[in-house]
Image 1 (cartoon, rainbow, N blue to C red):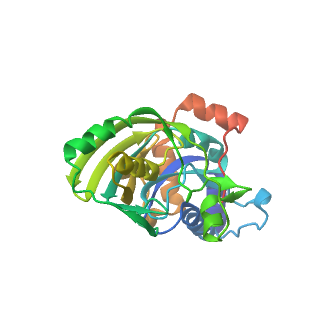
Image 2 (image 1 turned 90 degrees about the vertical axis):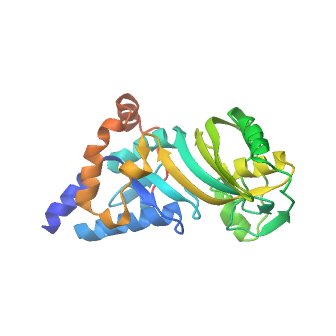
Image 3 (image 1 turned 180 degrees about the vertical axis):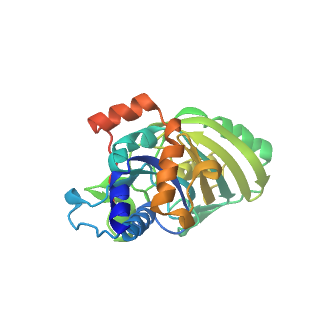
Length: 272
């Protein structure tokens, strides 16, 4: 039975979505998933990365304070993760007016507080409209972006000096206000790759002559995978469930792009 499970696990290839709760980093969650699958198959992980027992990676980091759908690549499916990194995503974000933090979300230290009682829902909706389309955005200092080969967030926590990244072009396809109960407001966001919701909320606060930070963030869709319909929960992390997920959702992937990446190995995401 163990040999059969090992053979089945090592033959798996493709993309499937999982649910990431608040708390663990995307890398921690991926490592937990990998270890659970290896244990079930009776396999041990190789210590050398180039000779991994099981290739597994994810297509787009979620902050540890965020939850939602995280797309995982397994086997040769890791070479298809570029589709997820550059594809569209949807989020539900709760912002808090009047409070800025160094991380741009509730996990950070408060760096500034400003009045917000002058802001109406109409003001918020008018400002939000200016962030739709092709916009320039400065990534947060606390992020997975790298400087000298190390993540900016890690460097900052080590006390190192970090140079801000320059503003870059990003795309917002849809952006709507779904609730406004000051100081809290809720946004539905559909955006392209490389977009930071934390930067968006911070910029909205500044445009309203106040400040703002993210209180809660959920990724509800990544590429063709939605949180409610597709994401595999932790209690379903086993070889049989992953196999079913790979087969059931294979038709959602862009076949031409996926086949091309499987063949060429382009846009392969980092593995765990």
